[in-house]
Image (tube, rainbow, N blue to C red; front, side):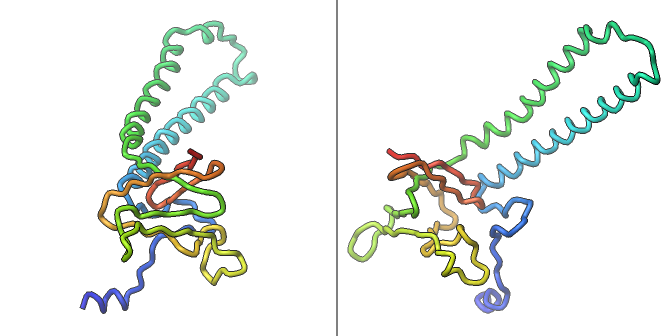
Length: 193
């Protein structure tokens, strides 16, 4: 019965879409943490933006040249205001730093190469007792089918096991490359060596 339900109901995985403004659905705890960190930092950004625009508005209304001819001599040298505009950003940075440190140490490692990626599953062996190896090339624009994404679809995509900890070891053969799996929250620069 389960097979029948899976066959009748199409499964749509989250994928990049043209003009999409939000994150893809997270496929790992790391990416869920990145999304949560983004939302936390965005909250602080909104609070800071509202505060700055409120101060600017109050300043423009109260200190306009037509409204008041009083010169505020003591506004430039106030110990209290200097403490506030020094300590407040420090507290905001500390509030942002702690969640980001936790997320930083959950990351894995990855490697890459020029014009294509080579993958090796050293934990799994084929019939000859050798580790599984294959190359993955971009699908040429002339070979793209309807629904495939230019510069994102490959002829042999890498398949990762489900419900398993995965460690990518990423390197490059020639120049620096970028290895990214957005749904896993993974983006690593592959460097030679």
